[in-house]
Image (cartoon, rainbow, N blue to C red; front, side, top):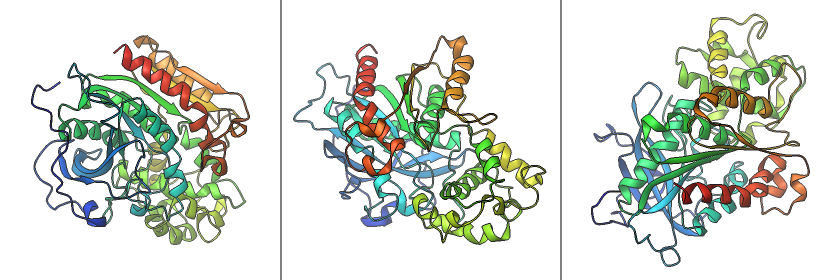
Length: 418
């Protein structure tokens, strides 16, 4: 910990409204995690009830090392109920990685006003995150690169592991610098769905990005093995709401390889739908007037996936790299419901689900002495009492509440023995 006198409340210097998300040009000099703007959060739809919410814009980097500004929320536990530890260690921190909402600025968790198709998804983890605050832990919630702050051609690089990791980890640095003396060195990473995949990548990159202090990583229904799913979907002669993920995958691939030409990847029919991703949530993209109204076999140009053109080959390469089979040196916990239809535990061969990911991670990290603690929920997740909106969102989101108590205890044990 820094021995300087704690500064709990930073000076508010952020513009009001959505102007907060417009990065200054050029960005101020600094390093990843340096705050640019900060003010108290005034968006009730995004705020956590059990703590003191701050909106932050901080420096980060894209995968090529170029400076970007990334937004998010930092929440301190209620200081009356949880005074700062007397030993000066500060509050432990949980860095939260959110699930898929889309790539449009309006659906970023800190920016959404509760009036988009992503609003139920953004609200779904609040029960878990409030439970963390009630344990006396601080919470940091990144929006990820270019989600909320995207401009021009700078799209959120969906499922691009290194980009997501930068968001999840740089907000840890921002929290320590903004609340010097209040945020401790000890932190955990937790995520759901897209965020579960992001959490695993963040744990992989944590040593060189943040240094010491990470006690463990937990991934709830983590996205995995997207390449096989996309290639199978490209042979489907039916329409399906799941094809709303295609433009998100393409945005992620472009983040990793800007030479990919969407016009060479997509058919003319799909290319007409491509701009909608800049404005609509993932849920809205699933509608019949959008990607939910196109046949899977009508998405990709030429004879993909059997004979991909060079741009589609590069697209596939980026999708393959999104599977979070990465080296991790801290405890890993993965939770997966067997009856989850969004992220599946098991898929027919040659497709791979979370069960295979767990095996991959165990094999990759055996040399580090790390074995995944796999909480595989057999069935009936939705029959367990859930908070809103998980009941209406189905098993994939209901798993968050189902696992909340056990997950919180797991993190508590890690913090206690750190």
